[in-house]
Image (cartoon, rainbow, N blue to C red; front, side):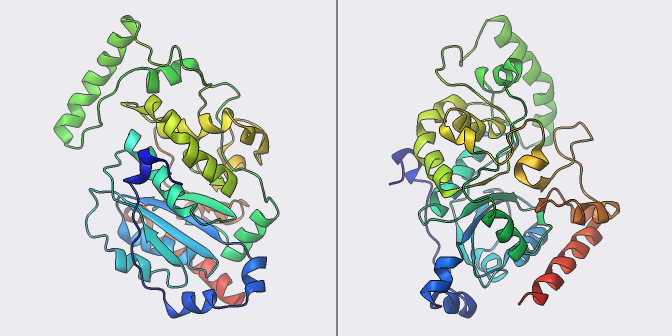
Length: 335
C-alpha cells in the first residue's frame, strides 16, 4: 500500500514491451528465479543524449528502469527513451519541478522508489542522467549477488555537524530561483535571511525526536530498505518542508533511525566511493563534484568502482564514448 501523501505522484506509462523483453518474460521460471532483477532509478533534467547513452548501457533483460524527467526539461520523449533500452521494462513517474537542492527532488526520488518497489528487486540503484556504469551488467549483478542484504548508503560523519543540519533544515528557505537575475539576488539575500533566523533563535528541529544524518545522494539499497523508506517517509516529510539540500539528509536520517544502520556494506565514514561503489571526485571543493574527463579514463576503469559521476559531453564527449564502447564491447563478449 502506497502512503496517501505520495499516491498522487505515481502513474504507469503503457510502454509496449519489445520482442526481447517479452521473450525474457516468457522464459523458464527457473531462470527468472535464479537471476533476481535490478531496478535502476534515474533522475534527469538535461543532456538527453547522455541519458540515452546511459540507458543503452543499462539495457539488459534482468533490469527494470524507472525515470523521473524534470518538469522543466524539453525534448525528452518517453517513447524515445524507452526505445533506448529495448530489453528492459521502462516506466516513468510524474514530472516534478525538482530544482537543485529542493524538497521536491526528494519527492521525485521517493516516487521512483515507490513505483519500482511495487515489485521486488534485488537492489535499487539511484543514478543521475549524467552518470555512467564502469562495469558490465553481468559484473554489476555478480558484485551485488555477493553483497546480498547489504545497504550501499554513504555517511559523511558518525554524527552530522549540528551547524549543517541547522543551516539546511532547521531554518526556512525559499525555492531556488531559475532566472539569472533572481539567482544573483538570491545569492545576496539568502545568507542574510539565514543570519536573521539564527539571530532570532529560529530552529525548527529543536524538539525533533529523530537523529538527523547526512551523506551522499546516490545509493544502492535492498528491497527491504526501499519499502521501509516509502512507508516511513511520510512521517519525516514535514522536516524537509522549505529546506535546502535535504536530499543529502533524508535517506541517511531514515537509515540512522532504523536497524538498517547495521546492515551497511561499508561501516565507515566520509568515503562515498567505498560506501556506494560510485566514483565521485570532490577534490574541487565546490557544491558539485568535478566533471570527469578523458585524462581520467584509465583511472576510472581501474578504480574497481561500478558507476561514476559526473560527465558532460559539452566539455568532453570522448571519455563518454570511450567508456561506452568499452562496456558494450565487453557485454557483447558475454552474450
